[in-house]
Image (cartoon, rainbow, N blue to C red; front, side):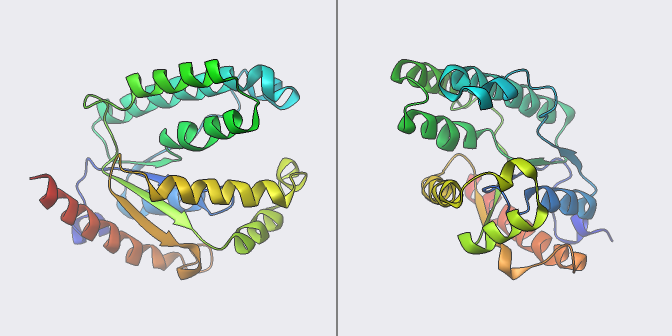
Length: 222
């Protein structure tokens, strides 16, 4: 018996992985997809026409970048559900407005008019009964010092040039966001409770928790 059947996870389930930079979203996405025999959905960065411009001038390009992300994630979400589900998704559509667009607005790199336009567009597209929300959002969390250590260990050039103050702020924004998130059920996992790189078999315990959570939330929806 495979793990999906063993823990009663529907073959058409859509599970989204969320969390700040460095918590291991990609590793979790791949491990869950392999354990459940699901497909994966990863963010497309290489084809983004605004990313380089954005890093050169946050204030000029933040609105364009966020609208592009919103459109791409919206199309991907529709594709996943039109396919019939059975996906693990790396990063959610909700983080764009709840964290990144709001951060630009708070810091003054997105004007109040652009922020209002963006949030109105997001609400009209996503926060409706017609938008297919995931069955479960798995939120990865842990102490910020541990997360920074992971970021430093993997050694990505752009991340190494980023100050720790930015990571602290991002960590706090993620915690505030998830504490008020209610668009779909949430399973919170502490990154110190598992190590999928050194002990890949630990994915079964996580899948068991996912199965239990999906079962409980399905009863609530009936």
